[in-house]
Each structure stands twice: as structure tokens, then as C-alpha cells.
Length: 280
Image 1 (cartoon, one colour):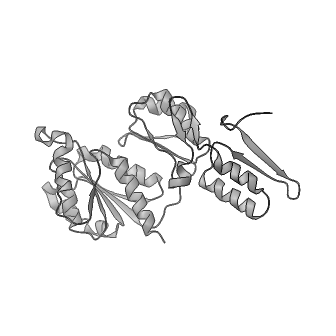
Image 2 (image 1 turned 60 degrees about the vertical axis):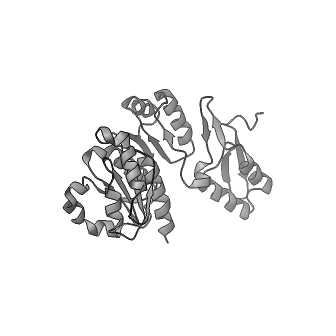
Image 3 (image 1 turned 45 degrees about the vertical axis):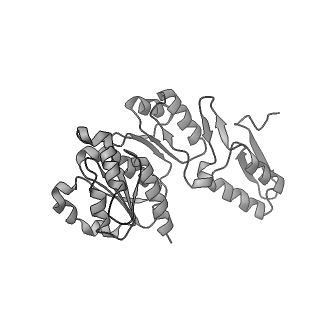
């Protein structure tokens, strides 16, 4: 059978008579576990150097016409490409998800609707729809949890969708996540009641709308990084989250980093990377 590298389904099959071992590699990219297996096979003399070079030099993408799926994302960054569902049709999200799951064991889709969830479930029966977070996840199996905790806090119940997006993101990336919701500055005793949780976390994601004061308060209580997430929750002069954003950017609390308005995913992802640095 003759084919080209551009045909993304092409596989190389190698048979080794001396031990009956068989190995398949996609020219469309390798994930970290496959890369480790391939290099170990080369080290043991089971795969020639040319085969290793061909595998790693292959174009690291899958062309779906409407999307170029990055098949090397997990190799470079430790986690597969994440699908942003907003603006994509259910069919597009399902197609991208299916392509990622051909070689990955984890999947995260953010900002989805129930229609997106139904379309992906037709391809993947084990997908989980996190309705509050507006996310879809697949874990086959779940990544092992690294040491250390990530705390996700939000000021009010109205901030839950953004806070849950952060929590779901951090969790699927292999972190232990503790949630602490509805602890805004209007009732500060609610936060002070759980200072023990705050001080045992390696990194804290703090979500707030309105005037966005909560991250500054939390930063004054802990010695760990605080990732502040402004939300678009609030009345007219909140300007869709700009008031909270500016308040957080001008925080007097040390160690506060701010992400974009309503960007729970970005905060959860960054928190995971920080927590990974703390792992032994």
C-alpha cells in the first residue's frame, strides 16, 4: 500500500521476530507516553534511528479543513489541545474532539452548550458535561493527582460558572482542587472561617465581580501565588467586568496575578502549571 505523510491515518508497523514485539506509530504525531516508548525501544535496539527521526519529524497536525488540530500539544506542554467551544458548531466541536481522542486519553472542551454536549456524546459515550462550568471532559483514565492543592474561591454564587471552569480545568490536568464559594468581602467572616484551607494550598484562584476586592484580601492572608479572575457580574458601572479587572490590576496585595475577564480556564491552566513546579 502506498501513501504519503499527508494522509494522517498512515501508520508504520514494525515486527521484531526475536521477541514478537509489535509497535505502531502515527505519522500525525506522538503523545508523551508514545515518545517515551519509542525512545526506549530505540535504546534497546528494537527500532532503527531512521524510524525515530521519521516519527518526530512528521507534521504535528491533523487537517480537518475548518481546523488544524495540534497533535503535538501534549508532547510540548503536557496536556492536549483544549477546544474552545464558543463560535464553533456542534459538528465542528465533535469532529475536533474525535480527532484528539484518537491518540489522547484526556479531553477538555470549554464554553459549550447542551447542543455541543449532545454532538460530542454521539462520538464519545463517556464524555462528562459539567453544566455549571460549561465544559466537557473525558478521562481514560484520569491523570494521577500530583501533590499539593489548588484552592478555587469565588466571591458570590453568580461567579460560579467562571470558578467552576477554573476548577474543572485544574482538576482534569491532574491536580487536587478545593472549592470555597460565596465568600465575598460583604461577609468577610465567611472567608476567615476557612483560613486553614487558604494557607495549605500551593496556589489560589480567586474569582470575583463587582468591585473585585476579594483577591487583595486573600493575598494578605497567604504566602502563595494568587491568580485573580474578574467576572462580568455586577450592575451598570461595573462595565461588564472592567471595574473588577482594574481593581485587581491595582491590587495592593503582593503576589496577585490577573487574567482576563471571565477567563476561568486560563486561571485554572496557569494554576496547574504553578502547582506542577511545586511537585517533587
